[in-house]
Image 1 (tube, helix red, strand yellow):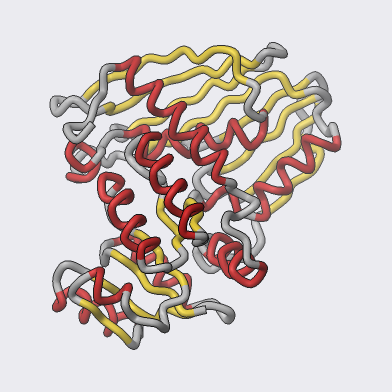
Image 2: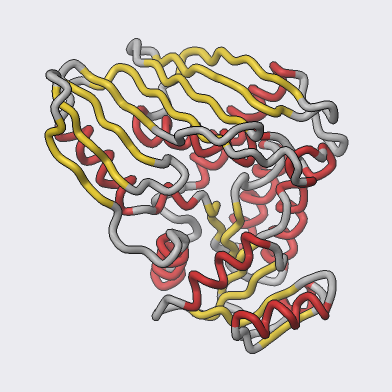
Length: 322
């Protein structure tokens, strides 16, 4: 499978590193607004093709899948452009800037009959699947409380503080905490409560939000672009708790019993970067003729976008193009 990338920034480089280590996918083409930038990227990562416009790359018949690696604010336009050219899409999270855009993109994908999925890498990882298996096995009894956080000091980066780029901690970091909760506890949410601290530019700098489920379970989540947090996810039940190290790229699950003794430990399989699993999911979907990936169905992408829209509305965080 030959992969083309739109955008030549840091996250595109991570995907290029991933593809370089894979056997069933290869980095084939890079498209940037600057041909010089594209050529430099191609030279660095050994891509055969470099394009100075996105449209030009999308006209290349040898591109099998396009990875959209531009800021959130541009995902809608770039995904639609790919779909218009009949190119399957792996679109970086957050899928779009808001749910209206997501609905438009997914609707057009259905209309065109073209595959698209969100590159929320944690959804595809083996250790994420193992976590759900452990919960189903009842290793901690009935789980009732979940906490998760993710934070890095990123407020100096323009894409984080600029409203025109759909900046803020939620779409970049909080989306992982939210997905972690939805993967573990499901979607039967009764109420959402939250608080937010804003930057001078009006986007969210850090936040906490609590999901209360109809059966009484609670997920207490937080994200920040002002500090480096422990990134842990902890799920507690009647007979112990599970500790997930790094909800952004789960590295270890520790099962602790009711006497606070370590019962078992599950380590992350050796990985290239962790991005390989979402690429593999795309390859399988294309081989099988699927229009979405089972690990991150379109309904879940829309659910996450709507929840984040509701949170931003509560905080009064609005992007200039909305």
